[in-house]
Length: 298
Image 1 (cartoon, rainbow, N blue to C red):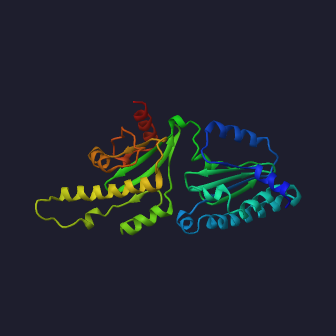
Image 2: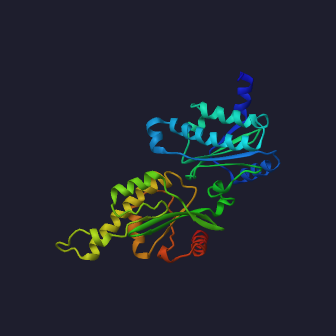
Image 3: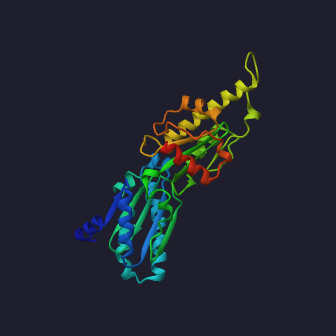
């Protein structure tokens, strides 16, 4: 590949880290006027592996996905027609110094056609997927990019033995899948953890409470165990879910008796001042949306 062609490839690959929803609408509209084929690739980023070998694991994973994209392309299109797409895939898989490998967050979404390639740096972990067809597949990205950011929020569903995170806006909510690191952390910390990736359950408090002694009542011990669990939840929220982000409010959804204890141990800045003071297990998705909008608007 000559230098001029390599320069054209570089110019045609656009890395987008912080997505303005208005820009995303324009990009989606532009895509509608492109000639097929359209290639959509979603790739989860394994941070544990990246800590050890930086960007090597990501590129290896991408090579496998690119190979599948090539297979699907050549099954329906002539190789000469899709050569620019194949060149972009090959270029990205070989260049370990590219920003997209060095700065990857929880996932990468690639959208390619014969002219351009957009790479979105995702804050949510997507499922590995390759889609080749006449149109792009934005389904997983739509879970992250909310058209109306003014109404976007996260919900932290919390009890003394349970927590989950939902992402939502005024149209609905969906569970945010936890990274593998979170599962491993809770599995090592709590033998009772059931391995679910969208909700961490800690139901066996009654079975592992420390023995009563001195002045402590059973309720005192249960409260201590709940506070201990809340500290672990706060750590996960800080380290894996919100980190230093403050632009998307996190609304606490919990029974009134847990509100004070969690706020005492909470350290992440995105926690919204007001909460939904209800047991989250008794609420539907529609009720959660209505309550969240009421809290944000009050």
